[in-house]
Length: 353
Image (tube, rainbow, N blue to C red):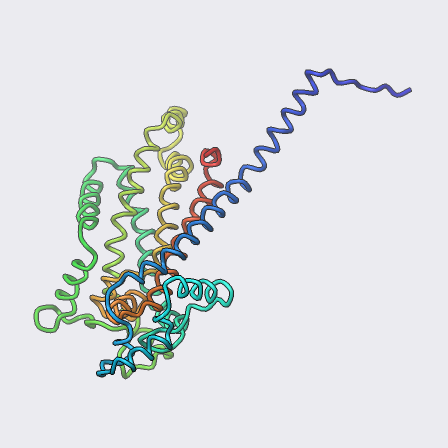
């Protein structure tokens, strides 16, 4: 004969409370992702609105740029403004801008080049990704290693030298460092003349051949070195500071007291926890990869998004500037979102926020 097991009210309360806590822990990561996605979407919406009105307050007359430097009559300038919708009210231009972007996914045509903005950005984005992406990878690997080695051997000659160099490089403006390297290593008169002075590839070289790839790599060396030296200091300082914080924690002292070797303590306990701020910083800097380094690209005449931004500003090309700044902002927001979510998954303490 079977017997029914009855659960007392206090036990039932404990069971239901345990189930609620279990569900709450399970839903922390999805709720974290949902909060971050909503925040990112609101940020992007704010960027869309600001992106339009920001360039409408810039000085200059785009109709003169459309005239290609020719002396146009008042009627001809008015016809150009009407063709591009520049004679309409700001509110009408804003409505057209939002409808083109959201409904038709169209960034419009460049005022200076009379081609779609997406086409112009597509031509310049890959040189920027090649330059800044390569330097970010090199700087993150080398900077993280320098930060780990310097913090673990705190006070040593290596730590003092590496930290001093990192602080010095961190204080240097990127464009100034680029000019110094350009004069010393690429100048034919004052410098050694080892590297090319600018550009991405020589005119008489086929970019699809092996010789073309090597030529691109040769042109890439100096601008990549400039950005790597500028970024490596930031990664090194952040990683060193994070390592020193973790090394002062009680669990590290307990691990050493148990007789674990320093190598195991560093590899299994200190470095994984200290990497969390470094991983976040790397992802945040990847967001800036798309925007590129405007000043460095200008110094080395690198045909990327940075140089395109400068040309768009000089030409008062509002449409192209809107597309560029939208791309820059969206890349930062997306990688910021990825960094927040990844940090929340790796660090349970962030899920409570």
